[in-house]
Image (cartoon, rainbow, N blue to C red; front, top):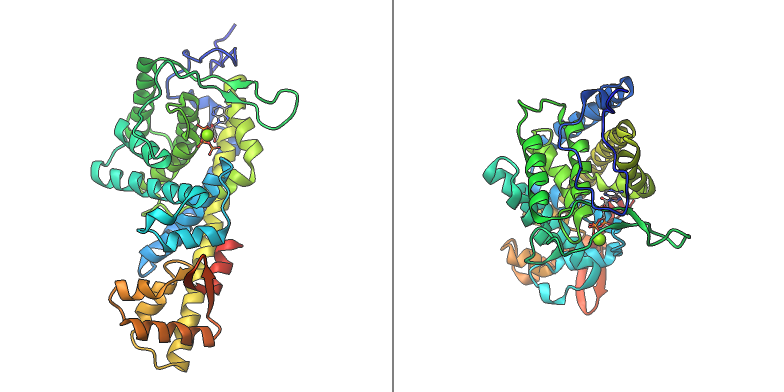
Length: 377
Ligand SMILES: Nc1ncnc2c1ncn2[C@@H]1O[C@H](COP(=O)(O)OP(=O)(O)OP(=O)(O)O)[C@@H](O)[C@H]1O
Ligand SMILES: [Mg+2]
């Protein structure tokens, strides 16, 4: 009998120490459906890339888009936060003490996304410290790779008859985790030896990271950050702005069952198609969001110039588009206006119907309604 193309995991309860090294056999992904879906994903991502480099002050957009990514990815772990809580927490960043619970976790995810991005700007390729740094930021811990004594397995969720039983048990043992991670790092870094389209590489690498499951917790979030960092490291995007976790959370059951499908039944094609579809859908979604934000910004800029005598409107508009909730102190801290002027101007924008005053736990904010609507739809 012919050797199978992929050696599956026969026992869900036993650590999968025979997890095959990368790469996988090309026949597993060289299919017509994958080539077709790959073309769609690439063209959507290319359009987003082209649009994003043409944006003045990219930083502004990136703040808001990466906040959305952080929120969606954290929801997969059942860390729910309302938009209001999140934006308030975000407006208070730097005043950490007051921020607790879910919004804090989301902000840590966002910070981890940037930590990863900056690590790659400095080191150019992925390494073990890259994984450890994002994990530590996501989980706010000083831990590293899980020790052999940690009995980690992935449980069936929900309340059905199989709830709590193992779907999958990752490899166990310090050396084996490090060896598997090193193999994964070689696979993503070495584009000559492993010359596969970067989007397919990302899909394979995400699976591999999740089955290695190197940490006690936070592997899902770290793995989704890894995805986005791969896109920028391969030059498919300049900045980590793809809102990829939106699709994953919207299709969470498929996400879980397709990962298991590879392990238990070697169903690589379905998994790769899922990830390519996720890239296509979210690239288009992010593209639309960026355009909506830019159009809103232009409209607001225009009405300020026509209907008010506000000075330095560019900087004011930039500030109210940096986050949905602006405070007087944001403008004074950035040395754009003195306190009274800042307050008067923000109130003028309230009169124009652009901002709305909000008081949340004793703090006064100005909500950019249009930005809020775009981000939450
Ligand atoms: N059958 C499976 N095989 C491998 N990995 C899986 C499987 N099912 C789910 N996963 C991955 O494991 C993650 C959950 O692991 P963990 O709790 O360590 O991560 P997390 O970031 O805390 O959780 P979440 O992904 O829910 O936010 C899932 O998000 C998914 O990426
Ligand atoms: Mg978890």
